[in-house]
Image (cartoon, rainbow, N blue to C red; front, side):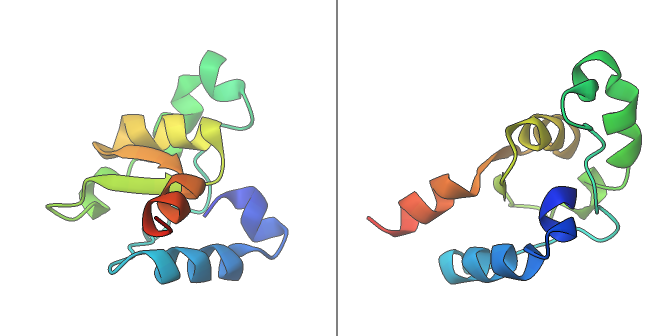
Length: 97
């Protein structure tokens, strides 16, 4: 759940949508912002790396995909988690077929 979604009060909506589409949902503890800071993660990758230090150890064995609602967040989350993050719209599409 992105920091922008949290600030706009949409965290609950994101969680409900995800839980309606997946059997198991993991929302990593202490990851409230990816640190990509819009597009600053492209020029200051240390911001993203620092924000996501605790992420990889929270990805359960066998977890192969993650979802978010921000492309830049997805880039950083993918790099620092060991799994691919994609738009939550892919998950919604996947289960609606």
